[in-house]
Amino acid sequence: MNRPELQFYKESIEEALDAYLPSSSCVPEKIHEAMRYSVCGGGKRIRGVLALIACEVAGGRWQDALPAACALEMIHAYSLIHDDLPCMDDDDLRRGKPTNHRVYGEAIALLAGDALLTHGIATMVNNIPAGLEGAYHRALQELVEAIGTQGMIGGQVLDLAAEGKQLTLEELNLIYRWKTGALIRAALRMGGLIGGGEQWVLEALTQYGEALGLAFQITDDLLDLEADPEILGKMVGSDLKKQKATYPGIVGNDEAHRLAMAEIMRACTALAPLGESGKVLIELAEAVLKRNH
Amino acid sequence: MNRPELQFYKESIEEALDAYLPSSSCVPEKIHEAMRYSVCGGGKRIRGVLALIACEVAGGRWQDALPAACALEMIHAYSLIHDDLPCMDDDDLRRGKPTNHRVYGEAIALLAGDALLTHGIATMVNNIPAGLEGAYHRALQELVEAIGTQGMIGGQVLDLAAEGKQLTLEELNLIYRWKTGALIRAALRMGGLIGGGEQWVLEALTQYGEALGLAFQITDDLLDLEADPEILGKMVGSDLKKQKATYPGIVGNDEAHRLAMAEIMRACTALAPLGESGKVLIELAEAVLKRNH
Image 1 (tube, rainbow over the protein chains, first blue to last red):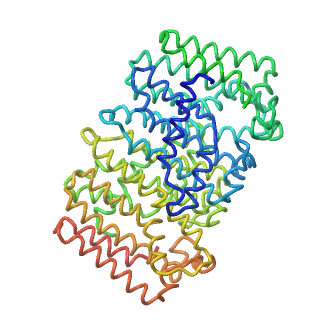
Image 2 (cartoon, chains in turn purple, orange):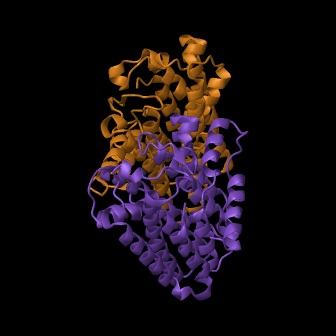
């Protein structure tokens, strides 16, 4: 992800997040501080960047997708805060910093997650560019479906139920498709809808998103085994410790690497109909495979 | 609340909730079961009923406000589930039954709350009656504002921060206005917007909602001291035990009763411009004052 436009998109999202989030000098200060701690504290902004690129690929202006990109990032941050809570994964570190509840306490962390989900929706509802009311409505439908009980939340439920159990690759795939895949797929579809993309463009973006999401999650599993914790910003080996099913655990490291690569190729193939305009998405997919955090 | 139309509205909301909520035989079953446990397990449906009545008062068809009424009830249920969690109020009983986390565990309760917030929004976004797209958009704006950090969540934050502290009546009023008042106010405004109400109608509904919300919370404080726990469905004296600031705690029981009555009168006065059509709202306000649970 070293292309200058990717860095530019990332910075534009970070500026917009700063503008859309309530100021931490605003009452009640503590919750706004806690929200900003998790949203503004780094992160790759992959979901937001995908939405902006998809909007351009579909023929729109990337700026028009900024409220949606920020909603995706806020909602991603909410899911991490709740996932890290003691009653869930009970994690102490995230992106190299103490998790939200380690800094603000469980009650505020719970509410900061709730508030980021709420504010993500509010950001989409309150900042619709003129003339895009219908597209934003459809994009919001995509979003709420992707983060519901047959999407992100459903994935977390299955993940909890699977702890300590022997899963088949098929069962693990469903967890991944819901837990992380759905929001990445939605990011692309939301951007595509806001950009006014035709059906075949949306279809290409969807296929790409599904393959990228899975590749992303397999490399996550591999990073948990192989990464440098300093660079990863969280503990390694935590999946093993929690007896979580993973791709390398089921098929071995080498096969997991091969399957991640196969998904990346599937992602890139899906973009073929888009020609030149899909090129930046191909580079992004390749970067996912090579990432070290 | 014995008027037959109020009972009819309540039953219509309960039927619609059953239709809008995912079936508990749908994967992942446990989360859908947990959502239904808290939404379908009784409750007065005050927020939903207020939205339906406001829609009619504003000149619309009550059926058109059903998706919004259900969203309000799902979101109210989410707030109760998260509020009852061990890291928040740590309550064991709600509406005479064990709280959600007591039945399903903390992790599922957390996610069921998240899912009800998400599904409440989805219900509004996916069930807009034809021709009411703009009104539903404005109603959704009202909703997300009312449940954000300067609404329901903000009230919970201030409530947490206030535990064990001596509050002024003014400070307590802000907590109440945000914690419970905002959603009741929003219920009326959402119904009014969906019903196509003119500005002066919305204004009357808003004034009514603000006064009703405060009266509702003061009687809640009084019920916590004076009610029969069998009828209330939860422990009494819990505010005292948690050293929560309350109206009776600050001004005494008699003055709290008087202030609740004054708010009910203010609520009813606000409805004067609506004439006959506001009558059912007046009866509802009087019922709030006389309720025993």
